[in-house]
Image 1: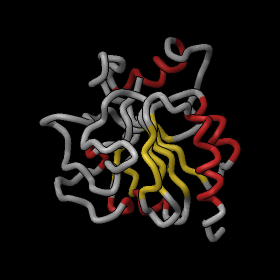
Image 2: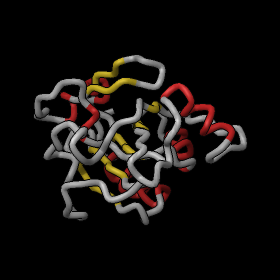
Image 3: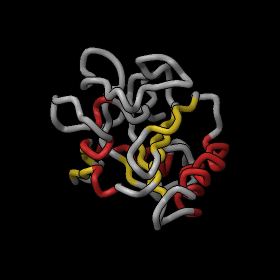
Length: 171
């Protein structure tokens, strides 16, 4: 349903040097400077229901960020203002409310994509684009990319990597 963190995260057209140079706008219209995530583990994905579980297990040391995208089968064809209601009533439905920050829709591939950040598109999936929804990115507490996960890799199975990175945090 959602695209992953992409080159469209930042507000400026300049290439960021670090993860902490990124900024994005929430669905509520608030600008978020990623510098506020310094020292925490960050998981970037779509709005999969398993994200709430992970965010609730590690509320002060893990940050989950969701980025809607309509480039994959037009799965997010509503407006930014309609996304939360769509999540609540349609997909996944059943009153679902994300317990993490959801940002405005962005393009993750193509001509309208902002410059690809060298620190988010990396192995083990060696491509320079996002192939489909549900790709995931894990960023370590120092802002370094840790791992990129395939769309087929279940979100909940990232937990051992999250725990490994949490052991590196200073708090």
